[in-house]
Image (cartoon, rainbow, N blue to C red):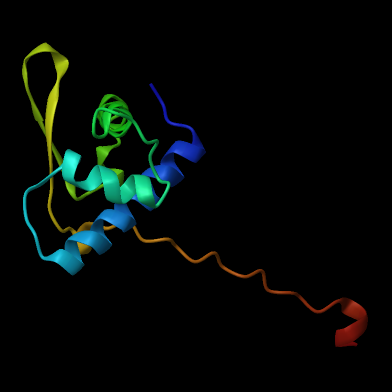
Length: 114
């Protein structure tokens, strides 16, 4: 199972929002249900009546694609029945960094060098 580029970008935006929240509140071992409302307010996850069901499905999709590292704050603890317990802690040192693209260097034409 692979992720679409949009899902990868969503995971990176979620990671940034989680890191910002954890830095400002200085909390540890935060559960997904606690983060859900913050992420839903930021429109990063879909609102639902089960306190983050769609968010947890997205996290499960990341696990199945072996891409949970896109949200380094998240740890998945397997439970029975293919379920997980999700906990979140700060991970500023493991955050993905956007790499700057090298700007193309224009080569002078032969007419300009002569």
